[in-house]
Length: 446
Image 1: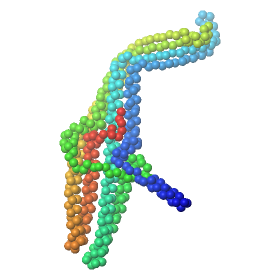
Image 2: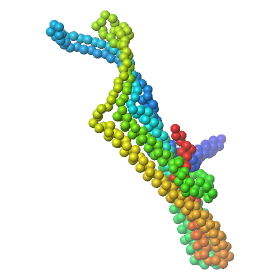
Image 3: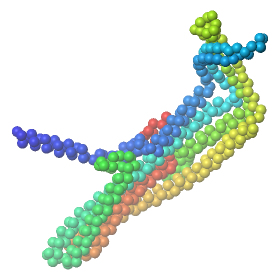
Image 4: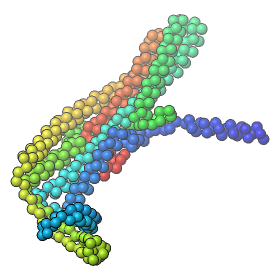
């Protein structure tokens, strides 16, 4: 019984250790979501969005009257001069008061209305800028994730080559023992096998570095193990959205968040110019006050006085600016310069987008052709390797012929893997440049 219980404890303990050390699976969707949630730069931009929301609420508040309450107590002790008797007497006095006051701007050159529109534009700009930052995060994570997958496949190719070279070494050892192959073939194969082992070591190192970079980008625990899930790649297919450069340019200008943000920003600057000119206009303000006061020196109690001695007042104030040392002139000029600068920035951004989209499109076409050529090269290298292997096995081919064919096959397999992931990433790059990566898949932008 004791031995059975001990065995059960050991099995449970081993199961617990295994469960704790089991690697965490991570797919591309999860990786992007983690980056969006934890990226500090992205969270700082989200703070700007929160500030824009607060500014929008403030712009609504300027149309509402202010309301202030006050309580006051005053005590005075000092000499007073009596002009009737000419005497100077010491006196003390106390007073209490309470009140409510309100102010409302009735007109200020429509500055408040333009300020409200400006806050709407600024809020929309912040949302668009945040969306573009999310798109940048999506691209960064996708780049790192695909690099991990690429190096994982290259590692697999290296391991398969090492396994093949070890099997080939056993065959050649037997052939040389029987005398059907010279000893030099055995020495060459021993060197080739050692070289294949070195390639596995280097490929393993490159894979671990890429995975470590991805873990750091996602702010994950670097001491834990992670298993990268292979996504379903589209491969080469008819992507009609990428066929026409003119259509891609049109799409980019219509949906790139940063370009749309720049256009909205110009509207905000136009309102700022209006607001600057509104400083030349008169302003009209309404005020209202209501309250009570009391004095302990009177026969009535202070409480009764504060409740019964109430009064109110209303007023209108018209302010007309006459001269303020050219301050308004400077504000108008500053707003006009800011508007012009934004217009120049928009023109520059449009040219930058056009250049970027065109270059990304040309790279996409180039990587697609390279992918197609790599597939054809891999098929040919596979046939050559099979043929060379068969010829060598029957003694019709040389070791050099087989070694070269095997080397070309491994090179073709590596080139195909590299081309495949370069092409997949370039599709994402092109989607990024035309602004079709959807931030709403990972975060709600309100």
